[in-house]
Image (tube, rainbow, N blue to C red; front, side, top):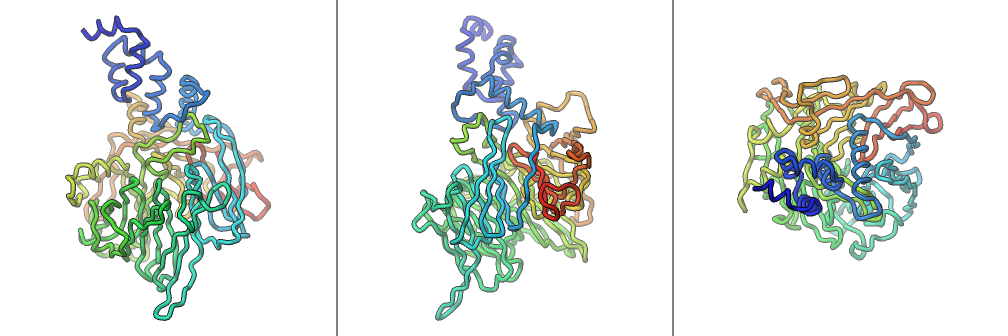
Length: 528
């Protein structure tokens, strides 16, 4: 009966109906019905819908670029990533300002005069032109910063000021909200466009981790043990504080969604166990609260480690935020979708005098599926066996920088098999955790090559060196590997750090021993 109905329906109507179904339904339809398979295979809009979902992308705003051309550009873009074949290179001189940021395809460096120099990285497949501009910031002594190009937002953290009082002194932090393009006050920020926060005077050695997610700005004030670290979240458009918490055990954070924040550290939920806590901003308040006694939505336990092992540092990296989209003025044909993000949680363990990093690769969908399984108001601690073995990969030797930390974008992680920081002789690896893409692209017959390595159905095993029990994890991923070609001078390309954005790979040589893209003695960067 279904086949008969389809036979008498106009093809145009069938296409209109199929345009409203999702990726899985389109794939199912193409597999169970010959007519639907033919319609789907021959229609650019339906193929584009499938390709968007499989690559973790979303359609861009309406423009003169039609579905057929968008489909071609998207396929070419994905083919380039899947083979690490770039369309061009660009040398960028690294400045001596000691601050940098890479966000939304914009690479920013501070200069020696305290200003910022911006470079929008080009994209061949998405027709983005390179654009360079700079901002002088004479009224702000910038200590750190971040940005969100989608909202034309520049967040500047000024150097702390000591404020003397009659009864007590305080250290004041001011956070300035500016336009990314003009450097002026952001039009959507409160008046005055400055967020203020007081810190413990004991926090002499202070660093910051700053993230923007839609209307929210979160700042982790890291005191490095001299005082409790603090995490504060503001609505930057109203200036209101949504979360204000502190603890010596509060070690790292990242936005999981606009409403949920992932916090890493030690807690009282397990002895000798690290936790990833999920904090719900809708249930928090502006009162300053000890995180050790604060409410949290749920927690994810790590495996128990030996009592003589001590975690000394903690970092959570993910980019971009889960609902991020480029500024509409870019008119890109497609961009990263709002689907699952890869989180890389790095913990450095000290054992005697030796420090060993352990990386946990986990998708946001793994964590959110657990969160969404809870009843309203239910608070739950997920044991390691409930989420870790099948939902993560825990690896002891994943190589990445501790300074140039923009090594993850979407579901991609960029690294080098020989390791960075020592000067790598031209070998790149991209680890891809996009589950739909892996299922679609993996050969039906077992296949292994020098350029692609599939980790589907295998197990990563950590011995009992740090954790009490052997740790086994199985989240599927693939490694795409490529040797870099020689430089224009015929010499191998060396780099010490690797980063990535939506359209580019960025290789950094902080020593300039291998190739020079700036005056002799300065540092160099290579953008792919």
